[in-house]
Image 1 (tube, helix red, strand yellow):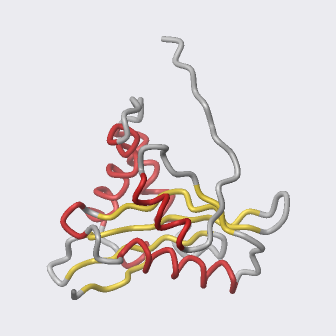
Image 2 (cartoon, one colour):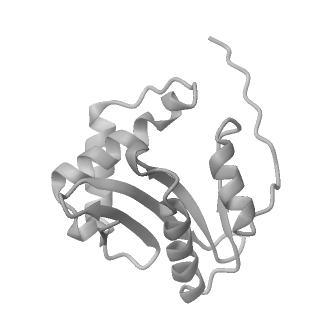
Length: 153
């Protein structure tokens, strides 16, 4: 498989727009409704563009030789309660799943986190996303809590 690892500053506006849209609509894929709008999408793209060289942000995408975004990962270093990295979003396009791209991206963010002096990584995975749960457990992640939600509307 032929792809290039690109950082936010190397991605086109169209690629960032697609990633922002995907990130904002991912909860729908897992059965939760979202109220995010195009304005939020534009704000997210602007945030990634402005922080693309910030030392606390790790944002990468795997792009095919045809400039198609195959996968992306967004993580941020946090100082409280002590230095750690939170993976905010990871996604692999359906045509490229089960080819090791998520494992590759999580290994990349782990190397970045180590170089940043982080003590641990954390992420949230939807309860129905069994594939990502398995990938994370195989990479050494441990389940630490369950978040429960009760819809009121």
